[in-house]
Image (cartoon, rainbow, N blue to C red; front, side, top):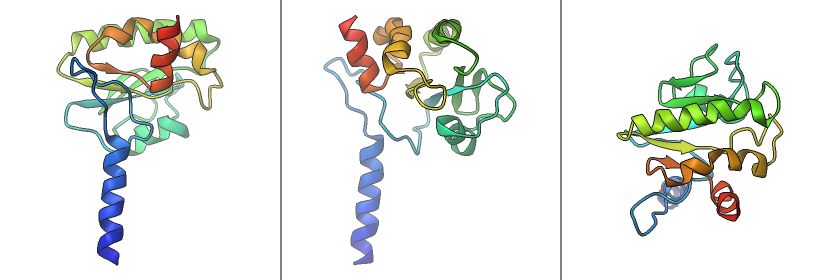
Length: 154
């Protein structure tokens, strides 16, 4: 009986991280729950400028993927912080643009973007997804399903 539960738990963890590929081999969507990363993957999360990674995806980034307490922007460990807590959606855009350029310069990495700004920061998915419109064709940037669907409607 215990063996069954252990196999079920492993299978559920694999399902959570399974990445669906499109016909060109590009991952379609970021998994809903990310608990592990492959060797070349980076966890992209919403942060605050002060780097107080106390809740939501930021806490996951800090606990699991090397986000540095006190650093609120950029690559750190196996995570990448995009500030979302400093104002309106227009204040997030430059950081998203910077991230997209960074990802383009690092094709050896695959960036799994979470629904940044749509939790504690309080933005609607429509507001944030549109900021990632340019990322839709960048092979190593993987976006959440809802972001992709919203961008395709733009």
